[in-house]
Structure formats: C-alpha cells, structure tokens
Image (cartoon, rainbow, N blue to C red):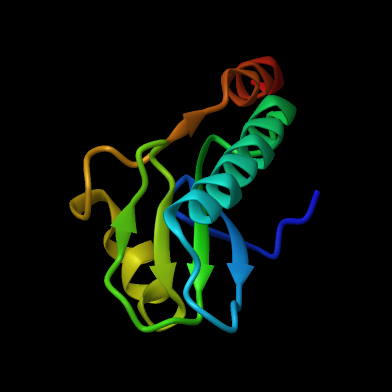
Amino acid sequence: MQVDLVASKSGTTFVVDCKHWKRTVGSGTMLRVAKKQALRARRMASQGLFQRIVPIVVTWRDEAVFVLDNGVPIVPIHRLADFVLNWEHTESSILVLESELHQSLLQGSG
C-alpha cells in the first residue's frame, strides 16, 4: 500500500508517506501526494485495524508544518516527534478518519 511508517499514540494511528525531493515541489504535486496518502489511510480505516487514523506526508525539507486543503499535514522530518505528541493542538482542520469497523470489532469481542 506504499505506507512508509505507522506510528501510534493514545488510540490515534499516524500513517506516514515519506518524501525526499531533490528540489522544492509545487502545491499541485503536494496535493496529489496528499490525496494518495488520504486514500491509503481510508483503505486502512476500512480494514478496522485502527481506531483513528491521521494521514501524514513527511518531508526532508526544513519548513513549517502546514495542512493542505484536504486536511493532510505536511510535516518536516525533524518535527515529526513533536507533531505526533502534540497534533491535537496543531490544527483543527487535520483529516482524522474514524474506523466504524474497529468499533464493531471491539464490541463483538466483548
């Protein structure tokens, strides 16, 4: 599925696509990459393995964290740990996918 990293904290799973571009890319390229990452995260959410999923694109470039229009954050690698620890305070427009199937699986096992 081309997921480079999966990190989890307090019931939230971060599905990460790592990018190392040799030059700055335009907003169109960033949005295309982010849309693909959101689709991967949606597929993972539909499998019900994780309660909450946040798709992320991580870059090597030293820049600020920003959130694209589709809710996918672009996070520089050196800010990844801080983002995972504090993402709830970063931006209210971050795409968070809730897995209804995960809830069904939990209820069925009890």
